[in-house]
Amino acid sequence: MNFDLTEEQNLLRRTVRSFVDKEIMPYIGEWDANHHFETSILKSLANLGLMGVCIPEKYGGSGMDYNSLAIVCEELERGDTAFRTAVSVHTGLNSLTLLQWGTENQKRKYLVPQAKGEKIGAFGLTEPGAGSDVASLGTTAIKEGDHYILSGQKTWISLCDVADHFIVFAYTDKTKKHHGISAFIVERTMDGFSSKAIKGKLGIRAGNTGELFFDNVKVPEENLLGKEGEGFKIAMSALDNGRFTVAAGACGQIMACLEASVKYCHERKTFGKEIGKHQLVQQMIAKMEAGYQMSRLLVFRAGELKNQGKRNTRETSLAKWQACDFANDAANDAVQIHGAYGYSNEYPVERYLRNSKAPVIYEGTREIHTIMQAEYVLGYRKDKPLDHMLPPWANSK
Image (cartoon, rainbow, N blue to C red; front, side, top):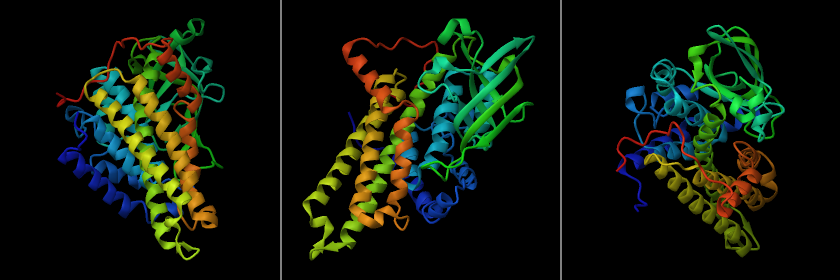
């Protein structure tokens, strides 16, 4: 049990932190206010080898371990949730799913350019009437000859207007419920595909989120990911990777709240002393620090299981639930520490509070994760072996 980061991981953290300080921090207030997603950031991340940081080198990635992906997500969310979300979706939900379930041809065609950052991947599961209840999907894929005809709609899809490739889930046989869902690789250029951004979001305003529409999209049968009926298993395994990155990002948000609050505690004085000297303010700072340290341990524990190629659904669920709750609490306390100034965009903490709400909802609400953890403890839930496990890190002992 070694809690020290490797030299390579420490270098990675410094690299991403420096990038965030120079390329995101000075501009994020304006991007957020204008609901602008700065796509050049993705190109810069690709140039740094961060869009495929944990994808094996043979598929165009940097070949680092899964906890290196966590480090990237933590440091990006310290800048803003929008850019961590982009990596979560592109790498966590899409690319790692291709690595886990894709055929060799699919990996060469889609994973390689995504790992290099030449193409962007996204993930289409949620629908207007299907969130936590995945079986309520309305999107269908009807087999016709050597193609599937895809019809339906997805919503709350990150990178909706930016991504080139989408992993989309649809019913190929509704009579089988969960076992009738299949997964497909859809290209933006396919006839009948369109997307539309959602406006008026509470937070993550500097991100691109919206709807996907499939109007009889003709998808070649070779773009079926896995087998017919394996879509639900593929989706749940993909969420293990997505939730891992969300939890890691939440650590970054706690750190951002801490940094802003500590700075303000030393600047602001009341009753003749720095507000950091007041015990109830110290209590909030202490809660943030405890939340950060506990969340980080949960994340790296899940990451080490991934490195070893072991199933980690239970551990990742716990990390996602706790880290996102801690981040939401930290943002709320950061606003309180800043007082009236925390209620304006003069300081970044109001953005942190707005951004912190979405991760408590997406990729499994806190309520869903609460139920999951209870069922694990009670023995009602057990993880079955998967036909395709996420490959272990090549250098794992």
